[in-house]
Length: 601
Image (cartoon, rainbow, N blue to C red; front, top):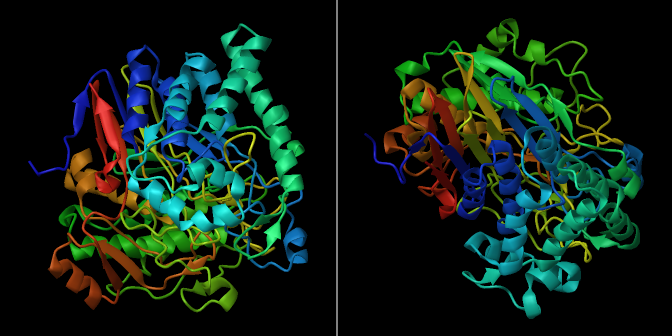
């Protein structure tokens, strides 16, 4: 047996894995009280908002993928839409050719709350108060600050003091930078959630009606009113170095709700992998599988240069297609059937050679697709490069921090849960992180800047427009094995999500690594495609690898022409995973960052 940084958890009662030990403990406590995986998912999601505020918040979004016992997998889309006023003309009239990376202009409808409520309403068993109480308690009593929260606050300290003063009131208590190990509170956020619960309970004693009332309070009550008022009456500094008011209104919140959808799926060996639709980047995972299908990966191993090279070259092709074809499927027809077809991938597969590609090469599907904008890293105009914060790989131990105007490449959270009945769920909550926009004073949270993922290009399927979903990077995964739900897994990491989670899956499937071994294996990823985060640059030929790869592997990758960056030994990836087979539950979590945890029995 290989050495692992922590045990693979094994049991038959329940498994909860997440990117923070406190959130995992909250989820497990719900299972212990008799709740199911979906109750636990809601409680875990709200806990993550509190303990990882630099990675997600109440004003953010979440895609969920779940398999209720004996039912087909489904996706819950908690990705909010652009405001009605967010037209291409609106941004062109401001003389902008890229959506800002911070402030109020990139704010979209906050979708996470309604997604959690839709999950609880349709699949949960507990009350609104029961699933929210743990997060409220933590927000009032406090939680220990991990180093990256401190680092994030420090990077925007001056911005908070000079411009985003409402954020300073919460994140710079008494005007001071908090210290590592301090117990930190957000009582205003707790008050907001308590008010929602109290108002919902005052309107009805019925459990499901209370949940529905909470949805209404969020989208049509005091939450919507406060967001409307703040966006209308405040001009906020952003990455343009100018102040802008927000476009988001109460009507925008009232006109949107989370939806239940069928997942996009692909059969690979005896597995079926399920992802969100191409309104997110999830299908790039499936496209990579389709490209790799005819290569003999079984003959390789997890540290070989051949394995890394093949996977990275497939990644380059799949993500080029993401840029050309993906967008909100409510407004665009995305040719997913063709993109996953053998005929299409046979031709694309032939582009993979023994040498690293230095081109961004989307496929050609007549009648579909748009421009792929390639801004080479370090060669963009001064107005972009001045905001560059370096290597766009996120979720590293030495991850890039926001700059002085709040611009960040972004990161997020993740959880996977399976209960004793066989219900399973994966979720990737994100957005509304503390550095995205100022705190709305009466709510205790800020808005998501997910709108930065829109292009200001009328020919792009991901062009900004009223009521459109930004093409998100958020990408939870669910896999069936021999037709039965088997595994839920995922990772934070922006554009790297459907790389790192793919590597976990391939190492588990082809090389027989257990979940913890697959997570512990040396990480790698590429940024050889337009980045989803402001300023949307492309690092041609880039390949980051952890230093734990053998020197022979790194040398061979250099010979193949990859522009290899050797990162620190435990720096790439934050995967978590849980599986169920023959009634046996297994779980694993990432050691990087020293805060992810799997709990189970």
